[in-house]
Length: 73
Image (cartoon, rainbow, N blue to C red; front, side, top):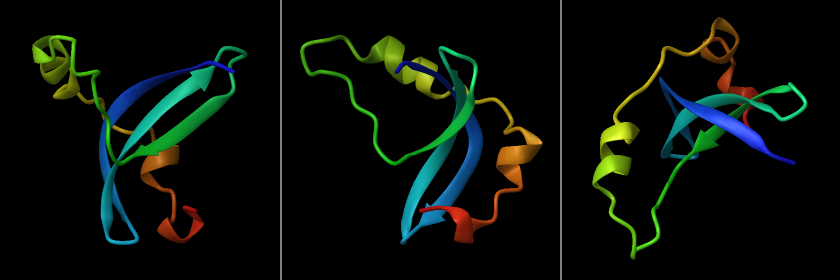
C-alpha cells in the first residue's frame, strides 16, 4: 500500500506527546489521516530543503479538525 500525505496545521496531544495531523489518500483513493510524532531525514542527505518544506501546513479538513481525541488510538 502507498499513501500520499500532506501536513496540516492541526496538532493533538496523545498520551502527553504532541503529534501533527497529516491527511492524505491511498493509491486507490481512500482518505486517511496520520498522527506524526517524529519525522527524520537520513543523515547523509541535505536537510535544508526538507526543513523549509516541513514548515508548510494546510488547514485541516473539517473531518480531521472535529475528531474527538478519545477516538485516537
